[in-house]
Image (cartoon, rainbow over all chains, first blue to last red; front, side, top):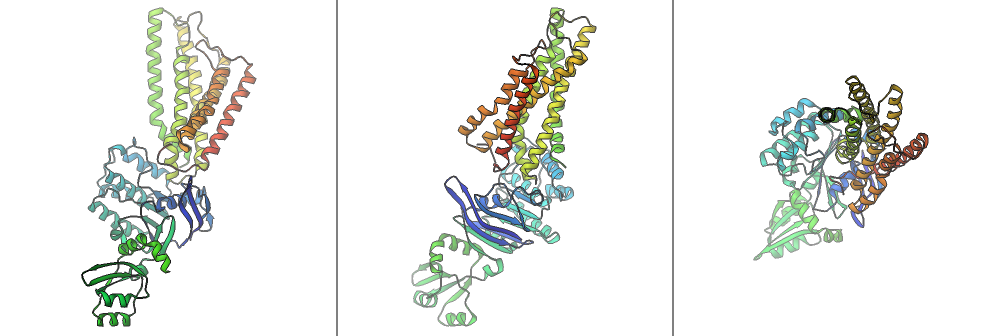
Length: 293
Length: 227
């Protein structure tokens, strides 16, 4: 179990992570979502012991994480800007990971390097943004660390590389289950592989739910404005738009079949709300939502 | 693999060419001086290798923080493990370089003597002199490396203005060692104090800087860049 209790990260007077409490069962793929500046990287930095929290604790399997050799050896944190030296060659970076990482799989790293078409002789400074991200993906996956944290590892990758990355991540996770935390803005692309979703907003946890629960959590209701208004009354409205006499509202509510039948009888149509849509609604109207709750 | 083992493997491709360049430059310049003047009045090896070694070790101290700290922590080492490994690596490296400086001086002394090219001012090095020269060069090298590490740590942890303030303190071990234990090209100690007092003061300054370095790094946020 990964436990974050009262976790606060500050940069001078700026509070990046504000009193976060999270209990994360291990052996799952988590999606950490949040807008720019919501505190995702700061939270992950504290979790990976890259930064000592201003207050609060991070415990992994009951042990304090910060400067704990057993925990750090089992943790792999890949930041969007890689923690490698630009003057080094790809081969040297992989070799170094092999020296230091107890679970490093050199054969798998070589296969991934081929898959992403990375030239091991190239210097890091000569890699494109997407190739650097691909190297991050190789380092993160081949380390086979029980806690793998990938912070926007897809940046600059083209669609083919991203597809390879998601496929390899899922395949390797299924073959060797571990805890993987993905921080991403490309929500739709990863939505299908996430098991749990955490949404951060302004340094606080806005939501922490099973991805399946989240997928069925909201509903869009479309139809005549008056009928929609009547149907939606009393339920938390995440977003709405109108065109002529037609109105569409997104509700943070899971209607029962009887409710759907009643709505359809009134000329309403219902649609699912994807995780990305829900994320947009929640984070762009978080204060309103919290007020409704 | 332990941190110090990994550090030796990282630095091996740098150390070997550095030593080769140093030996080549020394042989060429010494040869030119001997060819031109007929003899050598001072130790070219002490001038070149003595200075190159200590300034290179200062740079290694800087590189350990700027380049290696982040790399090791990103691959699962704690800051404490890194500090311990860097200390072992640093001590072995400085001892080895100090030994090379002293042995090189001894070899130069023998070769010039055999060729009858030693001038009147040349610092002839005996077997017992080697030990005392090592006793001067080694603590000076450790002081330089510690200075480099502390100066870099100040800039890595804080903003440049605070880094500059730390730099002043960080320069103390190198400055004290140089002033109290420095060996000139004639093999003379430039110190104004007896050796034991000079050594004690130099080691105290280095130990203080090493303690400060440990405090600065032990919980430093792992940043992408310094400053």
